[in-house]
Image (cartoon, rainbow, N blue to C red; front, side):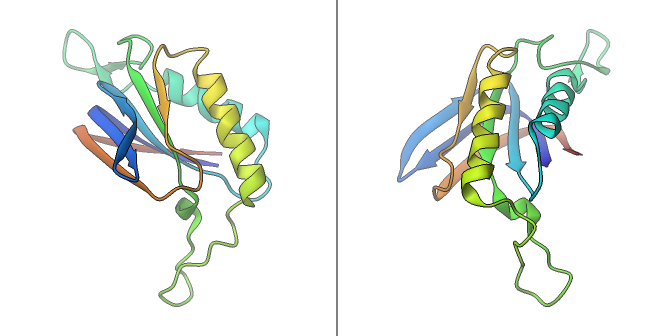
Length: 145
């Protein structure tokens, strides 16, 4: 499982020109699920995400978590995070989990994040989405299990 975490001052996701998720200060997270990923893997990454200290404290040091700053989450499922380009120029996605299982884990991650974060927005699994964001920093962290 892989999370690409971007600290943002704002982010939104649209499907068919309609905004379905929008946040201000927080994280926009691209979520990739690979074959064999488990609830335990999801729990590990959720804990890392919620406690990731990349927001500035009063001294300008990255020392605060998303919980500390009452930040918001925009969670986007993205199977292409497991695109393998080692052979040829067309990515292979054989490492990505099959859609039903990947969606189960994506929905689980959303449900669990809502236990810790006041505002959690999301995309639509499998949809053609347009994601816009203002990366704050820029800060982008990849966490995986």
